[in-house]
Image (cartoon, rainbow, N blue to C red; front, top):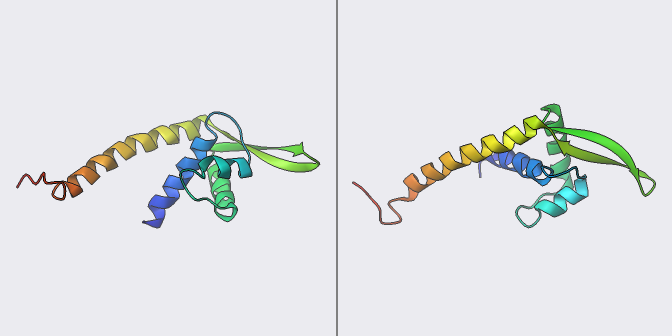
Length: 108
């Protein structure tokens, strides 16, 4: 898969994992695990990139004697998810066009 496409998909997966409430790294990994393989070494650069793009905010709080970072989606992050959904519908249409011959729907 194209690395830029995969990067964009992972960004939206992470945003989707926190769209209903704040979460932390390990929980995000657990939440997306049924759908996509995501390691800590992949997740934390994504979180930093999303924070830099103002798609999420971060707060630190103590948990079991340690500081834990909690991530919350911003309105801009919610907009990114909606933009992804629109883009995906267009990609689905392109995919259907590409595979139409394989499905026996060749119009030529």
